[in-house]
Image (cartoon, rainbow, N blue to C red):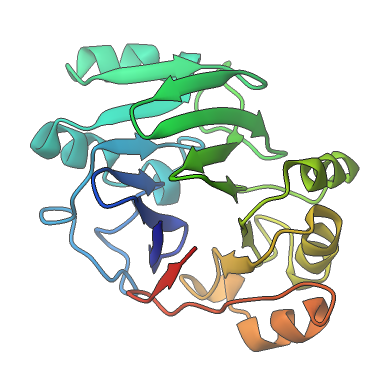
Amino acid sequence: MRLTFLGHACFDLCDGKYHVLTDPYLSGNDLAAARAGEVPADFILVSHCHGDHLGDTLDIARRTGATVVGVAELRGMLTEAGLKNCLGNIGGWGPMPFGRVKLLQAIHGSGLPGALACGFLIEMDGKKVYFAGDTAFYGDMALLAEEKLDAALLPIGDFYTMGPDDAARAARAIGAKITVPMHYDTFPAIRQDPQAFKALCEPASRVAVLRPGESLEL
């Protein structure tokens, strides 16, 4: 499986057949490595409805016919837009053509009344990836160590989410084979040095700092 960082909290997970996007905030993001009108997508995972995460979801889904995955409260918005969706709730697995996806807890506002923010556990091509979305650090992240994750995608920006110190605690607790920092440098309030985060994590946790557009083979 190829994991490509497109900027902020947007990743493209591809098994050679399916493209799975996370939180595609591309338009208006000066650091984005792809354009909303060109990026391929078969599934779009939406962690919550803040503008820098819902982003270009509706436009990309209209153009590509992608299925939007998230919490059940997204149904009204997506149905009104005439978009395909697969909506569940925190704690449940959903089977997908590429594998399966589980919605996980995230401690963060949702941007949608009555909804919860979430993260995702993604199984694809025999690999397991945790996409944290926007969240604070919480102790139950340590339970993810039981999943023997191939990768953990963690926000490090601080201010809106956990910062480098707490993200390093999360990385150590989760114990993924590799940790990729995200959600930093897009705005002045979340400027961070990813190499400093890497130093906090290693040698206990291996960190791959990806610039927008760079990929990692899992």
